[in-house]
Length: 129
Image (cartoon, rainbow, N blue to C red; front, side, top):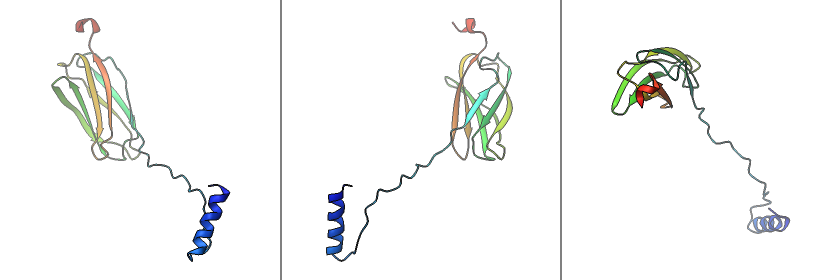
């Protein structure tokens, strides 16, 4: 606000009986922030029927985590368990043998609804051409 507008605002406020009114810039308030979880996969190119390890952080503390695998119309729940007190986990899951080529691993926190999608390539690439 420039000096002229400040004087006019103070004069107007005084004239209508509000007394002296200061005009200062408002403080910026940070927007609410939801940390995004991260999931790492031990093998992004596992074999069919392989067991992989998932490690994650930043889910809600002690919330139920559901791990699913999807490919086209196929969808399977691989595991369900609770995150630790810090919202992290380390867990092993086995890839069903019926999956091959490209698939998506879906890791979701039930209460927070935070979701991480990870692409996997299952099996030998030459079998998927």
